[in-house]
Structure formats: C-alpha cells, structure tokens
Amino acid sequence: MIYRLYDILLHISVIALLPYFVFKMITARKYREGIPERFGFYKAAKLKALSGGPVVWIHAVSVGETKAAAPVVKLFKERNPDTRVVFSTVTRTGNNTAAKDLTGLIDALIYFPLDLSWVVNKAIRLFNPKAFIVIEKEIWPNIFRQMNKKGVPVIVLNGTISDRSSRRFARYGFFFKGVFGGVSLFSARTKEDREKAVCAGVKDSNAVATGNIKFDLSPPDGRQSSLTPLGASLGINPKEAVIVAGSTHPGEEEMILNAFKGLRGEFKNTRLILAPRHPERFAEVEALLRRSGLPYSKRSKGNGGEGIVLLDTVGELMMVYSFATVAFVGGSLVKGIGGHNLLEPAYYGKPVIYGPHLTAYLNMAELLEGAGGGFRAEGVDGLKGTLEKLLSDAALCKEAGESAWKVVEANRGAARKSVEAIEVFLNKAKSKNAVI
Image (cartoon, rainbow, N blue to C red; front, side, top):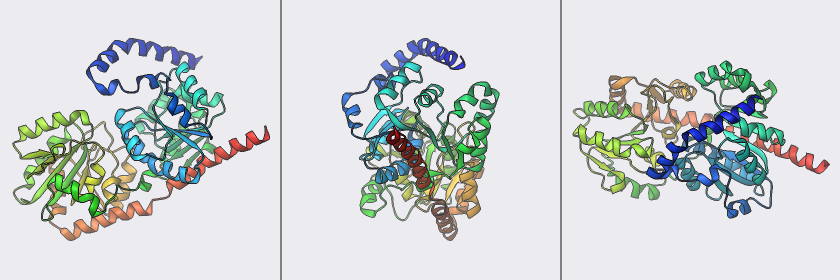
C-alpha cells in the first residue's frame, strides 16, 4: 500500500511540474535531452547492442559518480568481456562524461528512467538485467522494488549516507526500511556508512565496508606530449606558481578572488585557474571576474594571459590539476554542498586545500590531513594564509604533494573488491539458470 501511495504522489508531482519542465525544455537545451529515455523509450540500436550476453545495469547520477564508476567498469569488462553493460545517468553532464570516459567499456548509454512504476517496469523488461548497480547514494523506491520482484540483485557500490539523509531515513522508517531491506549488497565507503545503511534497513549480512573506489581512479594522460597543448592554451609559464581552484560554487569564487588579491603583492608570479562546478555558471563567474578588475582570460578562447584563467570547458579540470603548484577543491567553503572529490589533485601529487564544510568527503579529508597532504581552511583569511604557507615554502609544498599521492596509493583496492562482489551475484544467477 505504501508503495502505491508513493507511486500516486510521484505521478501527481510529475503532472503538476509538467508546465515548468515544458518551459525549461523550450528555454534550456539540457532539459530536452533524453526525454524519450526518461519515459522508457529507447532506440533499437541501443537495445541491439545489449543482445548476445547477460546484461548488467550500472547507474550514476552525474559527473562525480560517473568518474567514480570508471575503475569498476573498466575492471569488470576486462574480467567479463561477454557481459553487456548498460550505463545510465540523470544529468546531461554525467551523460557526456560517460560518453567520453567510458568509450569501449559500456554497450549502451542512457538517461535514467523516471521512478514511475510503469516506466521502470518497461525498462527492466527491455534490458532484462542480471544485476542493478547504483553508485554512491541514489535511492529509487520503485526501481528497487521492481528489481526485487523480478529477482534481480540490487547492489550499492561506494555507498555513502550523509547525516542529514540518515536522519530522514530514520524519520520515515516505515517506508525506507522496506526500500533498504531490498538491497542485496551495500558496499560502503567507510564503517560509518555501513552502520548508517544497517540502521536505514539494509540487512546486517548484506552490508560491508570495502573502501572508496575513487582511490582507484586513474588520472588522464599526464605525459608532457599530451599536456603541452593544454598548457599553452592556459598560458602556463614554468616560472610561475599556479593555483587551481576547481569545482567552485556560488559564494566561493568571491572568497577565492579576495584571497588571490591578497597574495599578489608578495607572490607576483602567480597564476589562478578558476573552474566553476557547473557549466551554466560560466557566464556568471565571468561577470564576477569583470567586476573584480583583475586581468583574466577564458580557456575556451585559448588565449591564456596574465593573472586568471576561467576554465569554461567541461572534462578538463582533472588534467588541469597536473599544472597546479597548489590546488583548492570547492563545494567546501560554503555550507550545503558537502565538498567534492579531494583526490583529483592528489593523483598528480599536489597539496590539497579545502574548506571546513565537508560531509561525504570528511573521511577523505582526514586521511589527507593525517598524512600531511591536505589542509582545511576557513574563509578568505584562512584560505589566503594556507596558500601563503605553501607557496612560500617549496620544500613543504613538494612534501605535502607527495604525501597526498601516498594516501591515494595506500588506499587503492576497493574497485577490485566491488567487481568481485558483483561477480558473486552473477555466478549465483548462472548457477540458478543452469539448475533450471
């Protein structure tokens, strides 16, 4: 009965919001993409690409989750080349990232269907997956329930539950206990995430802590031959120090620019590369740069000059971190975001700075800080002071970068454990079919 009520309310919400989404589809391209697929209509070519072998469905909501899934998908396909992979995302940027980073590893790329009972039933019937895998924190009651009814294992990889979500799941436990009770495996980042999953309703025997698969991510090609054109377009000068501020949000750019202004007197040969998290904010951040009076250029124009470069492109940030002397990872100076992947600069051996407002990435921050490779800074003064400390001491900066890289190396292995867990369920399915 509770699922029926959820389904009814979801249908009412879709109908009520339809005028808004029609308007957005007319005015914004990102709302037009994938509409048929969100209602369970897929091109014949995508369905054909999934024929000829068992299918595994992997879902990642956006860019961060898609990048996190990459090492798992790569290793899984290496070990199971005959298994077909359908990969879904919710956002356009996530879809574009999957198309670029997972080429040759996935057999069909789709937009995730709306969690309406008739839509998810149609998708499940068409794909006939042997396992449904969710990356990190996507909880969809209807699709979980329908997978359970059809005997398809639901697996959560790199599972994480924020404190706020944990409180919400407890408050509405009469509903979420059933949702989480249908999870066949909750592979958590940390022991704390595992405990939260059990409290939410996952069976104790179905919850394990396997580590964070983001440690297994391989950075883009860092060879000089690949970096030279990008460095030239950014105006990188080997004699300059480079601060890369990535994945920034509203309110953070102002603090970063104020800190940078404060540094310019002492550190004249210093370059700032500013990368907003969301492409739709590129124009907003450029307007902020104009008002600041600081000289700037745009990566999309390929004419890097002095001062600041606005990285107004998608998919290049991680490689740009390779040019950093010091890196700042956003979503952490302001409340309500929770931070972003702190490891991206660490893969290249760079010191990592971030703000105090971390939730899902708190454990990652603690590991970096414990090793001496991460630095937590609060506000403009804290950010400026930390940058001064690192930029004025080359030996400390180098040592911190090496320490950050060692944290990555010491914590690899979660991707392999995740793939092995998936294979256990696939082997069970094969055995069951063989008996039948």
